[in-house]
Amino acid sequence: MTQETVKVEGMSCGHCVMRVKKAIEGVQGVKKVDVSLENRQAVVEFDEGKTDTEKIKAAIRETGYEPA
Image (tube, rainbow, N blue to C red):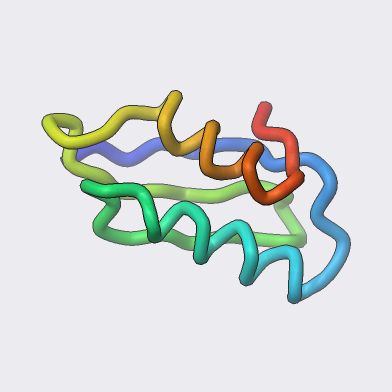
């Protein structure tokens, strides 16, 4: 398992957090997600054999937010 922290730009409310969390959870291989509005980031634990940070960032972009 790998854990990565991805900054997420554009979140402004709890609804934003839930959208980002749901999108990341939908990526195959993701085991755990914690999205923080206060820190503007997502901490993601995933199986590096099934996914990678770029796929997680792509899922964030698809929801309309910008990973950094």
